[in-house]
Length: 435
Image (cartoon, rainbow, N blue to C red; front, side):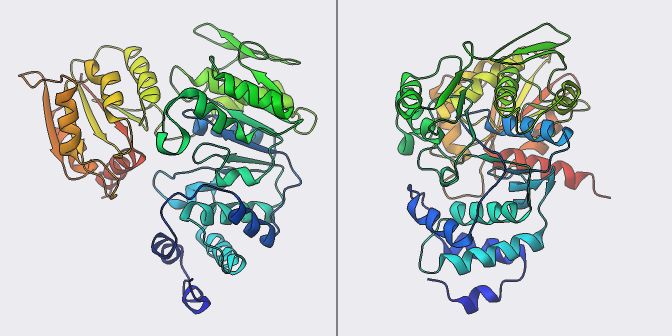
């Protein structure tokens, strides 16, 4: 147990984060009792609507859409997400602005004092600090993104007025199970009796439906309770009680974004009495979303795409999105991933679209080495010839710099995999812009 004299000496956010990374268990300890006890000691409660968003993929996009639309409606909105891309502060935003260091330091001291003898993981500790900041800010709406699964995730200590499951696919099998049915049950754990439960997966597992019905949740299913239709210029949303016509496409690009947008609009429809919104606020919110690393196509040549696709389901969506782009002579990939991911499954989704692989090590013990990924490429049948190559690098910056040096103006570079891969390239690009 850390002494108070030790934590009293922590005065900066970087000090605290360094302390939390070493002083708190890094293993994932499923269960809610410990974190709920500390929440109660801290007195964290919300009088405003709480939206909790879970799912294998699409969580971050759906949260960003909800935040943007509600802000356009004039509401004061708190958004908690994880992991962060560049700066820890990104995990807690109020009205689109990251919480400042001083507020985090104050919240960390409060959590440390309240937890006393209780052991918390890094994720649990920081999530409590973020929600403590939100509780003190007197918000109109709170949006919380699930970290892993749902039923036993720390975010699930809060009661959702609306819970969204965006998609269900295979990921984190060591914690959630190895089938969509098992994973669907875990994700459905964020649903609550008599509250709205939304699933935008077009083929939801039966376990999710059964759990929602068993607890008496008000289940909204895509295709049954809400839907969308559109052409190249605009799209329409249809829900149980509301229709939204002539909507602009979300500023987030990609094949699944209308599914995510439909889930967001279904949630806001369910909350229409508490958080009323006009048509123009919906339209403006959809086109003003800022979420780096989700099929983000950067300006300039060669074309550079950033995408945090790190499981086969997300890689399949990335495959579809790359197919929908214009012609590119060669495609370079900057790719790094965690060892516990289905890396071979990701490779199999994308191997036919990539000519040159620039593989990178990542600065975490649980990251897969570039050499290991290289062996998986060979296992997947990726060959080396005059038009195809595999190179290994120590970090994402070096991998990206090499790809940039090789790519012609009619080529493209796709940076994908772990958040750390995309973050490393973003920081590399930012550093190159410095005078």
